[in-house]
Image (cartoon, rainbow, N blue to C red; front, side, top):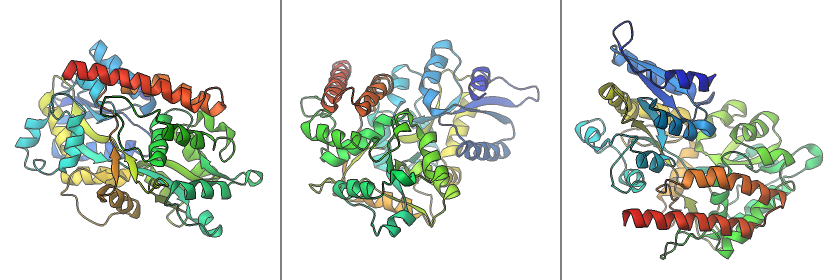
Length: 420
């Protein structure tokens, strides 16, 4: 239903019969938790801008990249969309988005209101150093855990990976349909796998000085072997096909999982299903050598498409979403970190914990190669099914990471050749 609506609404930017300017907004990570948030923000925008009507279209995240590429090729893009830096390089390479630097500079509600490091993350994705999305929020990896189970087992949230594996093992009781962990084996598996691998190894650079991917460093190979070794031992066998929805069903609804790896964005789902008495989060554990290595997280923003025929209205919507009140609302309801530094007020424990790690000078941030236009295709189309083979024992961790590293090293070399 969502996809059918997207097809119909892709070009829905003409003036309506009531004389209003109509623009279309695509939510590229649509779901029951997010859709009402965007719809409320749109309703507030329409109150403030009564001559503009916004058509909301929800696109599931697993289909959004292909959907947008198809829309670009066919000339049917939306006017505005929720864009993550994880896919930004591909869109900029296709000249699909308008730069937003001038709009930010001219808007006192936005100019100087974004954290410098966050803006740098957005600009580093593209070779020209421009800003192509107005930031809304950023995220951080999180491990959601059953507080009540940990308390009953007299366990503290793990601070190191050795403690993590020991806790997961202790909380696994297959006879009671209880498992220490749920591994993401289906759609969206690669970022979570990389977070565990680099977190364990303590390696802090994705590429070495020569431009070679560090993915297949022996320390990463060992780390992946430990992670993959959890499958079927400390996780349900069905985890091979796990995407976010299936993980949440096991953790929140079925109540059969002690620890679920995701990010801050699933906060609302857990609170609604289990409540603060039963669930909390801990950050990516330190390597056993003492290094706190975390992956750079995508920045979520709003982009205006170059093909839009209603750019003024489209920019107004994007700016409205990013301003203090609406940006703060979207971040709060999504359970993530607001990009606009004017957003004030008390923050939930999971946000405080995430900011503690990110603001710690000792934390090493592994910059994910979102600047590579091929990155999404390599991780989604190639790596996800290969990772499933690793879980099934049909492909060794070393062979998988060797092939993965070779693909990314080649992509990095091509990027350097094109852009110097």
